[in-house]
Image (tube, rainbow, N blue to C red; front, top):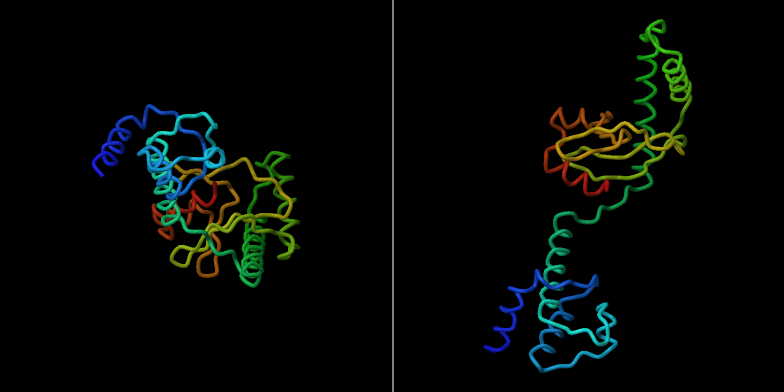
Length: 215
């Protein structure tokens, strides 16, 4: 037992100096390596290959410690960022429908207020195209590219016209950057993600989670 413990402590001091191969392994693999290093078990060529190691490559306790560190990190990330349940077909349709209603109301309000004399020809053309699109659009004309979770009743989505490429405009919140197509649905209304954050609908922790799922 003393020999086994001494091997682990010595490797812990040297682990940062050892080049770790990129492999996916489990706690059981780490224990097998430790038993091998302690002299109680030999690793077969197949086992080494499964770990991404060469047949003649020396296996050390540092490899086992790297595995254990990776497993612990993966477990922690899974706990912090659990897999999201996908939207149901009914919720997907409802959110797309409400988004169209929001955009239609926006353009029906905005278009008459535009001062055409002060708009460039290019900007006026874009505004006219958007007005024409959203005043006739249906839920079938938009798509939810990503569902980024629900936070205290706020549904966060990347949603936009079907087939449209992401706009080059982005919104930065702290150290995180989100595409212009990131929207928040709260109590039947849609808000740009930056507006929702400033309104207090999303916390800093929420933003961190959303950024993880958006990546």
